[in-house]
Image (cartoon, rainbow over the protein chains, first blue to last red):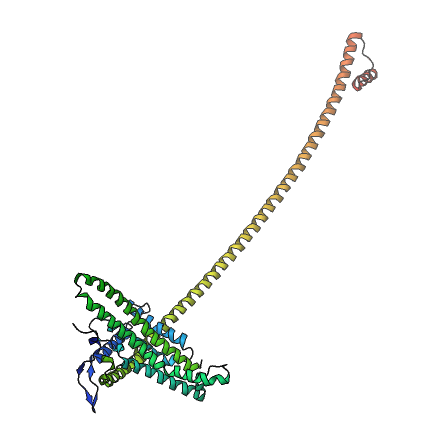
Length: 240
Length: 163
């Protein structure tokens, strides 16, 4: 019986070594490619008909498009349009990474802190650069809420700065922790089924329930990651 | 935990960048413009259809208004014609009645005058007959004919009623 942590192991499929750096194509990379492929087929394949009256799959692709478009419109507001493709890619990539990871025996690349942190860091650094380019020195006003008395700056600026700098970590840890804990729980509960014999039915029922919950969490966490990115982008573009 | 083993970090970041970058390009260059195009086309088409429906509705309303106007006009004309005909009929009937009445009056007058004449004649004849009768009755009874003047006087007296 495999341990509950085994599912997170990164195993190389094709060894690649560039200048002493291990860039092997691993099971993690394979599932990333698969997620991207599914997204591409889902969005490009379903729209091939370009039907005026959409088919079921086309309708789903359009719904996903409109979900993210509304998210960007409502949370980023004016000036958010150029970042829509990035936000859309972020959402679909995380969503399908989470969902494909729920297939038994698969690998969940979003359960790896380095992957979620890399995405969060790109979002954070990108948004900070956008804010500085757009507002120059006025960008620093982000750390002092408008209307606060000047002497409160001594406390407020460090606090705001801390909360700003902790954003990529909270983004990364939230997704990573949700995925990891969910998969651990599934594995641990599943481990009880066979040894308990007839009474294994009990953990099996629990497993089905937890699995359903995990599907929901997979969607919600993709949504949360994306919507928080949108809110941070809104702040950088409009300064509060 | 395998997540905190840094030996796989480089590979994971590298492949994440590659795959995410490729997906970004596919989405921003191909997938999203296509969906935008389809959605725009659809909303345009719907707006078009709504416009068309609106203009057709307006046209229909115009036609209905024109039809109702024509109907109203025809009704007005019909009632005018009917009023005229009724007036004509009334005039004709009064004229005929008047003509009839005057003719009736004429005829009545003529008849009355004829009757009066006949009565006068009859009265005159009755006087003559009474005179002759009186003369003959007197001659038979008395044996001698009375004087004509006396007879006429007594006949006149009898006819006027004072004996």
